[in-house]
Length: 198
Image (cartoon, rainbow, N blue to C red; front, side, top):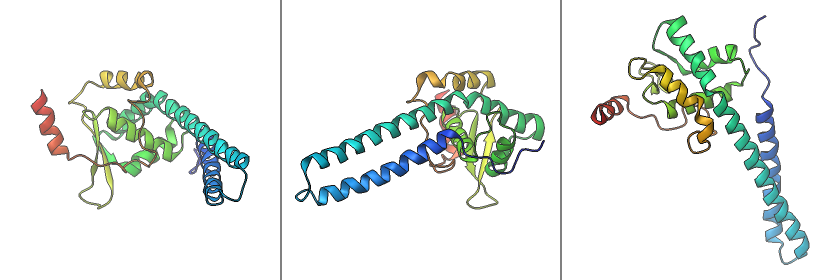
């Protein structure tokens, strides 16, 4: 049947949201406790600060697990991107929003649009010689996802992404902002730099 337009958020997203809510509440408690330090017991201050530390540890663990899961799915996302652009559309560029919609409909892991956006972010960072995000010249504020199939061997790029989990977190740890939030390099200067290093 047809995949629904809106998919429920994954468990990892819900876990992160829950931890973030607890962290905000705990931070507020710590701030209030600090202001009232002279009026409340040391034991209560100690308990509040311990809770803040425990929540931070839990948040870090949840985020690290979410990043590991993301890294383990990068190769599958890359395969799907290649199928959509080069096999079906038979072109080397597509609007970022259109690509995310296609991936959201067909990705085997049924990931949310936000998580798939993080996938694109990580793929662009790990394989800049094979793909890039560029600003649209026709629609200001929009992004174009472009692939360069002749610049790099796809199998080598895929192997790099497939083994990214072994070098986590230094290799894969993109921003938790949606795709396109990072500075976009000038494609002409990047190409010139690449030629200079060959």
